[in-house]
Image: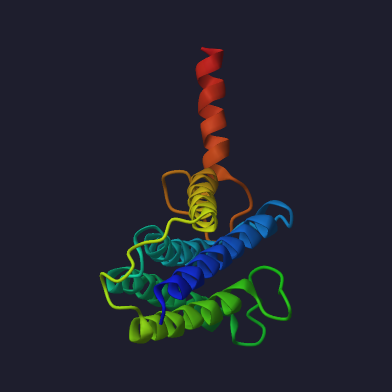
Length: 190
């Protein structure tokens, strides 16, 4: 596989991961669905996959970077499958609203499975090391910056929701943010 083609595929995949995380943000802030702890762990899986893709975009395709993607997809996929298993029994309910007939955790499992297949294919057909080097492109830079901003936003959002402790099983508010504001108000009053 030509290295430029592999580079372009990594950029497209990085945009896709950022799009998934942005859609989750949209649902969180516009739809009002706070992510549960399992949802947050799936986001971590997507961030690990995205980090592997970003490394490929910045430094060129590498088996180590694809390995990082595979680890992120396995962890995220296992968490997503756990959440599917929690809600597969009729009458147990579901978490969040469905998107195109499936819940986020089901879509997450499908995407993580596709990441595993895609990373495997890229490992089989990847260019030989040392041929061509990395490619610096405006689209690669944009994809990388967008991903890191979205990943950082997820970290801030998680801190706002959970604080530095355990996240609630069924979150109803941004407990970390509210606790911080209470501490700030107490300090201001003194």
